[in-house]
Length: 638
Image (cartoon, rainbow, N blue to C red; front, side, top):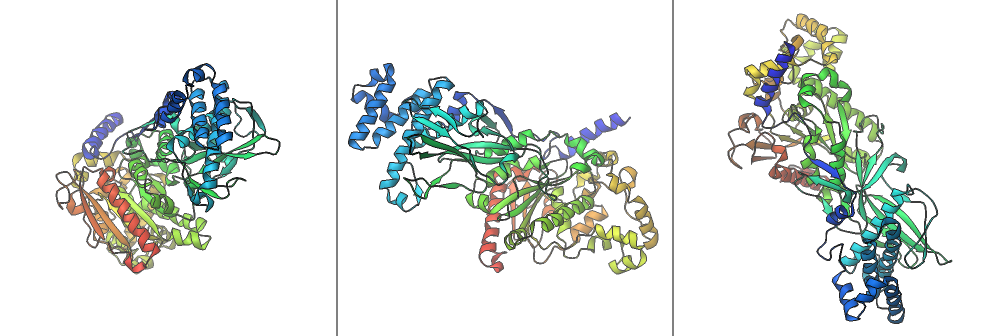
């Protein structure tokens, strides 16, 4: 009988929430391929093809009748180019030599290719050193641009070849690895340099972003520059007491290879791993080039997609129906290691959903350099079958714990106190409960009793438990974004199928333990406490019923006077027209008076995945920065 009811609940969930949610949370797919052809696709450039010489190099060989000699004896041609450079000092010979070595490396097996990668690297760095000496911008320590995209491509491919060679042989952390290039020069690889936001021992693996194929992201957040983007996979451990580490967490890293020339004629190399979530450029300091800054190659999409791909696949129907089994995984999760210099944005998912639903939003937001520099993203995971007020209590406790843990410096406190909450659907109801002007209003409406009388009539232990569910003031939340939120409920929740789903939900153990308290409160106040669902406990689905007393109390409550809030609402029929419905939540339920802005997007219930909604969140976050950096009184101005 139970199996039949669960089958019917599946049908109910599809009908009720199918337009906005899915049973499986996987949205973006990732596959890995370490082949050279995959790397070529990743670094594809309009300047040249990986399997061909550049136009400049081929023209030089043809014009000097060297093309046939190059095919037969490439090292002799490289020796001639070195001689031409010594005689003329013309940097073009270095560029051509680097390109020839890159071309040759692509045609050798790894043990031979490394020699040409080292030679190409040597010529590229020699070229950029000469450029910096004569460049006004280089002398002043400003941005250093490679004079051609070809030099950048050759340098990056050389770094890629060096990294792959060392990783294959488990030598990334080795000291004093000696290698020879194609012309016999000795290179010594020293201990790597880590510029990461976490200890290097916490990284379990570095992989080339170029090894992965990512599908179904709306955009790939990549930016050209020097170095090679990597996916750094973090070992699962508890970094913070208030923030959880999700399985498969990654950070974006760019690898540079530094060169210094030793007095004995050997070339000293060092791998530099740079966490691009905190640094997007790098200052080079070597004898020939002092304090020269270079922009790094960046890839934020591939590490994010790899992280989401490694998360445990969740059956969202089971998650909703069995909050009892989900309590240990509820909590506040980080998308990247905590940074006191950044403002937290907390994303809260909706019914029968999960944090993975925010992948398009987060990926697109990270494409903006100001967003990357100033914001860090967290998400709150909870079982959507539990009562909204119970999940809101867990979120509130997690945020207060984070405040206590992280607000230990003026800078960290200042940024924490500019927190933004962004909730979709039921997640918006959690947000609404968190930011009440009167923290006791909801309970006063439910109990038909003023709060002081509630306190006077209840036993201390019962009142203490009740007060724990009241939304204590959270002044550090300064802005909220509501997306497709049923502030006044959704009619589908009170249908037969909605009632069936509610009855099948198994309440969390912590809710069941409050049953005796509820009975004592009901008797002491002479009021009937609303109950429904399994075990006489209100569920998340009950909390979406427009006739539910909790929903009506929330819908009539006032938000904090100093809170700036925005609405993004779906309309299945047309853009920018108030009214109608997103298929689940009607406009009359999503609209909020007093919102700083309201955007109606042509969309089903998954409005948070639509490009227009993502652009609106981007706009809101940029406005938030302006209000933080300039005048506080401008916070409500658009």
